[in-house]
Structure formats: structure tokens, C-alpha cells
View 1: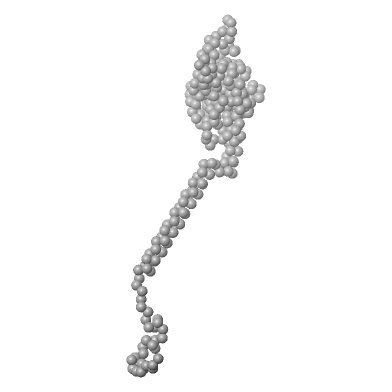
View 2: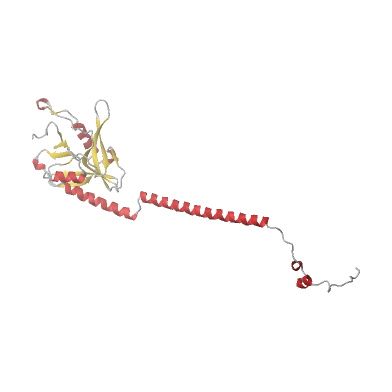
Amino acid sequence: MEPGFCGRSMTNFESSCYTTGSVRRNLTAELAAMRADSGVMRLASFNSSAALQNFVKESQRTRVGSGLSTRSKEPLNLAQRLRVGLFYEHRTKKVFYLNCEAEAGCKIAEFEDADKLNHTVQSTNSSVFCGSLRAVNLTIDGEVLGLVSFTDCSEQLPALISFPDAARNRCGDWSQPVLNWMLAAAQPAAEEEQTSPSPERMRLIMVQFVAAGLILLLFLSTLTLIFMKQLQCLQREAAASPKTVPSPVEKGGGPEGACQSDAQKPLVHSAP
């Protein structure tokens, strides 16, 4: 392969060749497939928004070189989302990229200017989100912009693949640092989830609390209604019952006055 020219269907950018994968895989399967290829291929990655936008612009060119060395090439198809080596950590709200160097090997490094990166983040419970790149048209003259979407790493996507344009720049097995970093990033998120309830759990607790309050209110209302009905019944019964004539005993005089015979009564009454 001629240095500086990767082929008509590829893009050469900063001493690496870029092409698109044809198989949809999740992150773990993609890393395993690239590791099986002796570590030459890796996920395309960029350390800044400027580098990413320059790559998108370069990938859409149809001719490269100058003068007699001008060659025609096909633009990369960035209309669909392609998995790239960019990651978003939910806990820190930071963007990271896969940094592979010939001497130091591969590691995860922080993105230089994440505030300038055109990106979206999917709302899920994941601790780490995986990035995918696609190009969107801005103007009618063909100017394009790279947009990065951070979604769940289990999503099945084709990959944007890069490999050095010289064999001496091979990074070896670079996929393990990615998995190690993702595992380490997931541990603080799991500890934080254990110490503080999630918003979904808080909403569930509030719903249960409100439901219990409504049940208690309904129970008290039912008891009050039953009591009022019983009270009304007692009042109606008291109003409808006849008045009884008091007995001599109740009038006074005791049992002697009530039981006294006519013989015992005086025959002559003294004049008043």
C-alpha cells in the first residue's frame, strides 16, 4: 500500500487509513473481532472536536493529492451511525477517547474540548455510553458536520475502522484498556446507586406513599359516614316514640300512697 493513499474506498487521515465495517456488532463483539485480527485494526478515535470535524471533511473528498499525483477516491458513507472510540462517562459528565500511540500503547484519555463537540447523550441507566459518528448536511453546497451520539454500548452498530498506513505503527492488543476502563468507570456508579436511591425508585416511593394516604382517607371517610347514619337513626327513633304517663310512684308519695284503700281514707274532710 502506498503511504498517504489507502485506496479508492478508504480515507487517509493523519497517517491512518479509515474504512467502514459491514457487520453490526455491540462493543464487546467488535473489540473481539478486531483483537482476532492481530490488533492491527481499531476503532477510529479522535482527541478533539477539531480533529473529528477535519476527518469528516477529509472523508467526503472525491480527489486527493495534487498535480500528476492527483487520485480519485470515493467518499466514506457517513450517513448511518458508525461506532467510534469515543465514550461518555455518566458520573463525571466527561468525554473520553481511545488514545493509541506507537510507543506508549493504548489508553483512555480525556477529550480535549468536549464543550465544542456536537453530541447527544441517550438517557439510560448505563455508567458509560459508547459513541457513534454520522455526518449531517449543513448547506446545499455539500458542507457536512460530524455529529456524535452516545448510546448504550450493547447497541448493534457497524464500526468506523482505522489502521496505521505502516506496519511499524501497530499497537498490538489495544482492546483490553477499553474494557478495563469501562469496568473501572462502572464501579463508582454502582456504589453511588447503592448509597442514593435512583429517581425512578424515588418516584415509586412517592406513588406508594400517596396511594397509602388515599386508602387511609377513604377508610376514615367511610367510618365517618357510618357514624353519621347511626346518629341520624337514633335521633329519628327518639322523636317518634310516644310520651308515657308517670305512675303514682313517679309522681311521689311512695308505694304507701299508691296502695292506700278507700276504707283507710278519712270520711270527713276538714273544711279548708
